[in-house]
Length: 392
Image (cartoon, rainbow, N blue to C red; front, side, top):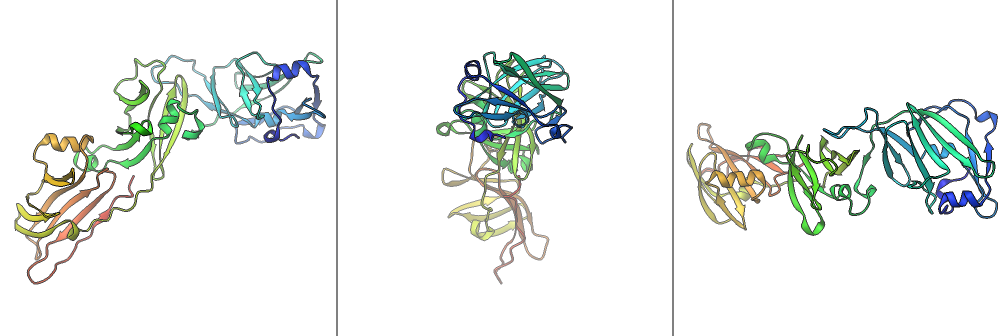
């Protein structure tokens, strides 16, 4: 059989088939029977059929079974609030990475590119795919004998495959979305905000990157050339939309609709170095005055802190966030910087200690700090610090 990867350029297949005679070769009897389901969601129920394309000297044969293995079928999830037929399938061409939705019964014309890859044809072609009910058939009209050769099989739709940025055309909405960076979960919101799960995404053209915080269930839409958060997508009939589908330790999965075509997209987790911050490196000259306040020095700046105080490093200087507006700015991402929150001062134990949480500027990494304050007789002991920088 002919290897599709080495197929010479086909040009416009209808022109080639119209000008050059073709020969249809039926397979031998030992190829009869039913083959097991493949990873592409097809089940052979007809004899293997070969079509001879006389390209150049000697010609070549291309099996319909080989062509079937370039096709993937998946159930097309309906766009929210969209009115589409109950049964809708997405057809993916595995080599050319093209996708198209079809509601059976329907026909899709096919052709081959100059690289020998199967593509959708916008013009009528002597080579086409038909879907009717749960059955698919590939057909070819022999221009010499004016007869149609078909091969049919049962369609077994698979789950929509996950795609990555490079599988979408350059500059397309889902290519831009796939080029976003996922920085992980917002630890600050999880601990001190509304305790919801918020994922931090850096998206947009590389010259105009911006951070977008997205909760599960929240929507983003491609409007005005960029992805923006959208509270309601009912009024968006054809604009690309997306939302978080699943969060895993190795990546973030998004689902969306490009028009009415369902898309699954994956973002890989960036390799963040472990967050290493020692209490003795953060504080100096620390003194516990009472269970209500301590005095300390942070980067040569003197502070008096109370439980519940937020101390942030903004524009290379540390300062206490006194106003709720400032704290909310850190929670919603409009203000950024390293942040320490003092939770508790313990003076009842034999040794005085403080507890709190330190957050890196991106809020996707945090460290719990339990610090035994040194006394006049010795250096003191450092309590356990748990790094959560690797958590997603």
